[in-house]
Image 1 (spheres, rainbow, N blue to C red):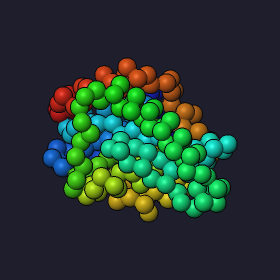
Image 2 (cartoon, helix red, strand yellow):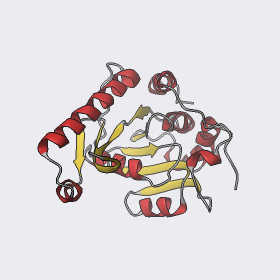
Image 3 (cartoon, rainbow, N blue to C red):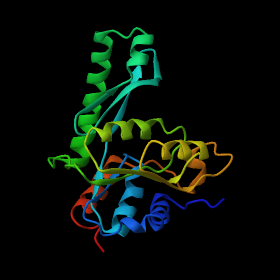
Image 4 (cartoon, rainbow, N blue to C red):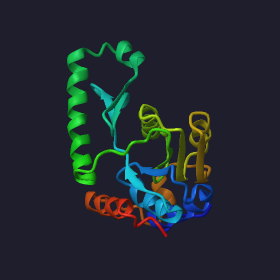
Length: 218
């Protein structure tokens, strides 16, 4: 199974499978920070469409933070899993505390990445939602659920590498799921990159600025 040199290379390979969306005015690439942004930048650049960022923060269950009881996302969207909230007896005060903590971090990232530029209107648009890879897909699922609240016409999930079962499951939840590689066994996203070093906030800001200023148009 081929590996990717880095996220730039991965984005270029992913863009090859998305050529049908090139130059279409209703298309926008939304990347999940931080690692999805270098990938998304290459996709947007190749397709000649705008790039923006979609910040998602999982709401971790108090005491079991890895278990998501919901998520918040760009655009002020809040999604809750009522079953988990009720099953674990989460109080209003606990829910409010977790939500406010994650909202502060989301707003910090939004300011850092987007500055004063408002979140784009996604009504009736085709959104290509990009990350650098999918293991369980929990963050991507939260992003898809939040994104639906923004009224897009179509949602396409696009990643360079994913666990086969995750990619397959997502195809039932969105209009299309494009995964360049679905290696077996999968283990972890980072194993399929020669360079999987952490993307910094500065890199996200710079790539986003270039993508939204028309740098993505060939």
